[in-house]
Amino acid sequence: MTGMTGYGATPAGLGAKVAGDLREDILNCVYASGESITETMLCQRYQVSRTPVREALRQLELEGLIKVTPNKSPVVVGISHQDMLDNFDIRISLEGMAAEKAAENIDEAGLAALKESLDLLEFYVMKGDSRNLGEADTSFHDAIYAASGSRPLRSVLRNSHYYTRAARLGAFRDGERAKKAYEEHAQVYEAIRAGDGKKARELATAHVCRAKEFYLARLEVKGNE
Image (cartoon, rainbow, N blue to C red; front, side, top):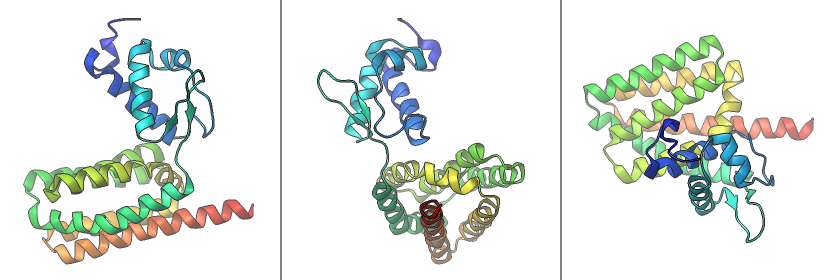
């Protein structure tokens, strides 16, 4: 298979596109931890040749999501419970900083992007659409990271936030938690809109703390089933 630029990427960027889709599939548990995946399987799924698949596997091996052993099929490593907790702790430490900086630096375009994401959150909460709710949540947080004006902070938080998406999807399937999460996002938005950095920091930090608490509570329930 060659010249498959219709997949949505130039030939040079096709490996990165496959890496992104495979990463999302792993984080969404399409492939289970410990599952073997072959190049042929991935070529068929993503409709590409072996070259971009190999590039994607190398990238995800660097990220620790895939384990590649010579003469064996790659194995999915996935995200461990400790990975999830570490990512929550990173976000607890840094989300407040990003929100505070956003309150100090956001412009009209940034505020409009943040409000648009918030409106989408409300819409998908009302529809009970957990998948699109997760995407709107990612957009909301990324708008805050962008408005912070700090490229290093945005890079760290975007990666950390992405790796907690499995936990977020679980939370958004719970109607009450989804509504509460929307309310927490709305409070953060209002603090940023008002330029109140201190309040924005406190609210953003509290939001991530509650998300971690919900994740741990769900694990406890599953453990008792």
